Image (cartoon, rainbow, N blue to C red):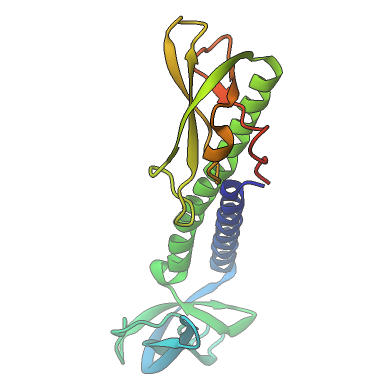
Length: 241
């Protein structure tokens, strides 16, 4: 499996997981909204919450925020309290503020402040991020597959010509994990144009310069699209796993 495909698979997997989680949370909130009852509540206190997450090495980072403690009266006359699941700094609410409440009639303690962004905020963040990672991952997976398919087609039915090795250069326009691949340049008369032309290989991750000196190199050309070609380095460079 190529490095591009490995990275793409990771991006695609993470992206799909984020999209799946966002969809699950969205549907959960919609189902809850469909069955929940509405009530008017009052903020009676602000609760300070500390969130700790792992940082680099053994370090950890913490942040604090305020969540509203809300009391409300259910439809059956019973009173209940809950602490809002969302915290922020500065606080989004103040003591004595009236807020709309959604609660589960079967378990009134399971209640939330009825604010769209607070309830769907995590979905709004996760869904675009998941979509972006999925698209990037899909491109990283698809491009090597399409390239391999094109190479197999050229090997099976392309017109073969013999070319002379010219040089190897570092492709600084392409970088993966901080590394730049190499490309081999060969030269020969193009059978379709009758002119001398350079042929450039696909990216490789080793420098084969010493092996290619004075060696004839086969190039396969697409009959229907003569600009498409494949520099066959298989006798000199091991195929990418």
